[in-house]
Image (cartoon, rainbow, N blue to C red; front, side):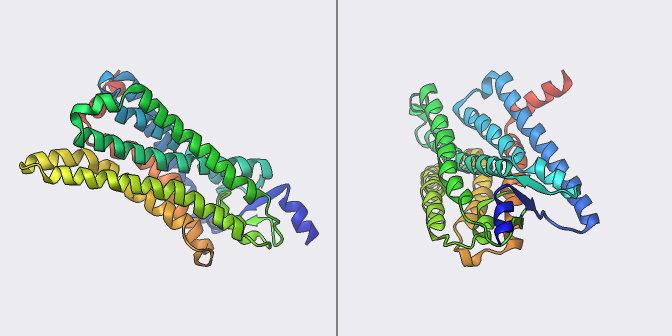
Amino acid sequence: METANQTSQTTFILLGMCDVLYLQVFCFLVFLLIYIITLSGNVLLILAVKINPTLQTPMYFFLGNLSIVDICFSSSVVPKMLINTLSKDRSISLLDCAVQMYIHLAMGACESILLAVMAYDRFVAICRPLHYNTIMNKMFCIGLATMAWSVGFLNSFILVIPTLHLPLCWSNHIDHFFCEIPPFLQMSCSDTKTNVIIIYISAGIIVMCSFLLTLVSYTHIISSILKIHSLQGRYKTFSTCTSHLAVVTIYYGTIMFMYMRPPTAHSPKIDRTVPIIYTAVTPMLNPFIYSMRNTDVKETFKKMWTS
């Protein structure tokens, strides 16, 4: 028991997705492709916003922040997962594990808040169009973005420190492809009720409040859209929100499922599968979902490609 405890304080072993060789190769190729698309799509979107003056609006300012979050989110998990997939040595140091856990939790909270802020931006644009420039001024937008980043890093610090101080009595093997809180709670032989309460409070304040703010914003948006007499006008107005709604549904759904379930409902297979959506798939889809309906973004991409 002492040996296991001493080992768990210096290094961990990530068990990964699977042990079958051909599945490992398949996973490596799929996630490598996803990561390349994630980096390319988000970097291109950031450059498009910088290059095209018509995209330098509050909505795309927040979307640029979201792209940076997605790059950091995916980069904190996927590269290490790719290395471990084909490597016999799947060890990760305590420091690397702490950094990985800290960054992905910080980016997760930051993305939750940014999605709520973007919903509020759509609410002001649709429901208060005459006051849009006054409300969504430059300083207010910078303040909202700073708040999202600050809360994300502070929240991660509050969650990571108690988790890493848990006594791990059973093994230093993490039944996951990256360092995340649920596997650590299962590995601990001590009472984790305090940790679970901290997670619920954190998720309740950040994720649920962000989700509720998004829900309130879209309730007002839909109410305003229904007052438009023209069917074409309704469709045109609502189409500006569909991309954001798609991202919100995927992201909040998986995050709440992962972190707001009771401890008894956790299982290693589900805990390994669900995070793939918000650590790899969502960061890849975001730039494409937001740019598909915007002709300015597509034209900027074409100019960048042909230049």
